Length: 303
Image (cartoon, rainbow, N blue to C red):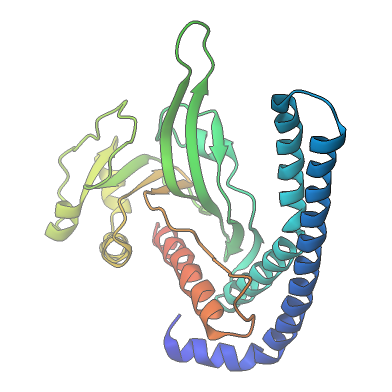
């Protein structure tokens, strides 16, 4: 979102942001009160265990640590509730202005089946991540989130397996037409973390030297791949790479599109101690939303 557009948006929604700031102040008061109460309660709990209960020190520690974890989670209740609603409402507003119907789930990640069905990576069975966005624009359905995929296995008499398969941003979409083939495009700096496979570099005459320098292809049908790689589609991939820098792979499988970007950004950051009506937060959310818009533009160029 351009600076001028951001300023216009800020002026339009400033009254609403001021209401959010009142909500933040109220949440901050509740957060501080709850933190003080829990700190006092935990201190009393520890004192009772140490002074009045006779048991081995190791057992006292084993009891106190889970209680501390519970208290810590409860302590951030009002903080997390405010941040979740603030991020959700503002991102929906920003996406809505771009003609995108979406839902935002800050603490969820993309479903594991979408990672597995792309067949881009080795098998993974443990997934974590957040900032899940699901949306639709003009017949294009998409979802994406930060994602970390691992393969873990417990073994007797041998070290357990804990292997990182993918760490970055994972995005997939469904286009309203069938390309009738499968094409995988890797940026040349993309590397599979657990290298179970080499990236093929099949010869293809794209007639775009810059594209050939930056990307390598894996395809099965030359003619249908030529139909996919229009000048507009190749240019939008080059623009995305130049703008965002991150290594990525995109796979088009009939009417399904999968994008895996190797990056470590924490999207849609909102700080509890920063005023809700500050331009800083709106700028952060708008900038991160633009990353999604650029991904959507890639998929919209597939024709």
